[in-house]
Amino acid sequence: YDFLGLSYIPEPATGFANIFALPKGTCLLIDARGSRTLRFATIAPAESPDISRAAASRKAAALLSSAVSHQASADVPVAALLSGGIDSSLVVAAYARNTSRPIETFNVSFPDRAHDETHLAVATARQYNTRHHTVELDPSDTTPESVFGLLRHFDQPFADTSLVPTYAVSRAVRQRGIICTLTGDGGDEAFGGYSELARAERLFQLASAPEWLLDTAGNLARPVAGWTRNAGRQALKAVQLAKAGRSNAAAFLAGLSSYLSEQEKEDLVLPSARLGLQGIHRHFGNPWERVNDLEQLSRQMTLNYFDVSLPSDMLRKVDIMSMRAGIEVRVPMLDEDLVELALTLPHGMKTDGRQGKLVLRDLASTWLPPKVARHPKHGFTIPLDVMVQPRFHEALRDLLGAGDSRIGSFLERRLVRSWLDQFQLAGQRGTGGNISREGLYLRIFMLLALELWLRDQRLVW
Image (tube, rainbow, N blue to C red):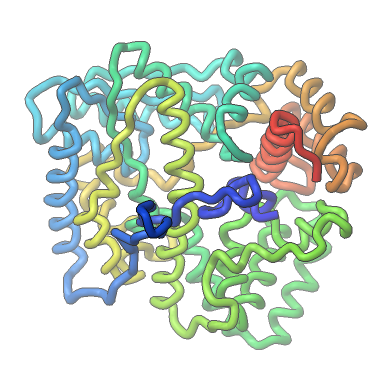
């Protein structure tokens, strides 16, 4: 049930009953007395220090340089993944500024211009004179055999679509004879790069509006949401989240982090199959705690990133896809000293309501090409709907729409068929109908991952 909202399973739970992952920051000790866990690390946003934004940027520069220098030390050549975003570009810049050796850098190119940031990666590569390689993501990477094989490589349901380009670039690195690389993962979580932080600020302000005004806004947005591409739907969700935030901070934060709301999950899962299942908000804080100020809300969001999505989604994806290709990925943005600094930054040093990672952007303005430093945050997503071939749609219907589908025993079949129809049309029209284009292919990918896992494990609901 958690997976249907998040597209991954939050640790320490797994896809199997009575099998658990170790909680974050713990090790398992087994001796004559039995077994027990020992905690060796914790993540806790601290009170903001008396430091200016300029001073924080200078300190971040020094700490990032030190982290990259340490993590680039190996008995084999170490490359760098260069997506074109701020984080990976800063890692490459720190690497180049501290070595005289030529650096090999890699990025993935997408056929959809809205997703392709190759020009940004090339700009940074040229400034630092790296040996850059652009990996073309082509139709062979999105055949049913290829995508199904990647999903099956995970030991439990996992449906982050960026696993496809993550494997493609990891494979390209290995084909060059390189077995170790740096990446920029972790910068968004630590320094406030996700758009949800800016959205949370606006929604927090909206939540202070009178109840009658929120009700009126919801009534106006509801009919519009059914026939506009995005505006009406986003307005309605904003009102719903703002109302939730008035009394339940955990539900508010869960709503910002979930692909399917609790109501959408109820529409998808048959009533008999969700008896006794709990909502996703339990992973995002105390459900009875109210958020009284923006700083408290921002700290809780940062804690959620480190406690939920970073280990269970982002790092899981990178670990498993890179190891499938036979390479090691190192994450200097998650160096303890750098994260310790980031955890003390106030909300105003993370986002100004328009863009995030303000401290890192200040650093980028001196280290990176202007168009890279100014570029807005763009997720590492794949335009799945326009890349797959007709054969992929046929395979989806055979798996998800067939009478013997595993998910058909506990999900609403008519809704699943509706999503399949819209997904096929979205690739032709560039829109997902009454669901956003990205929201639509995330839903399909999520159902596909779940169906394959249930079949492979010979499980039923």
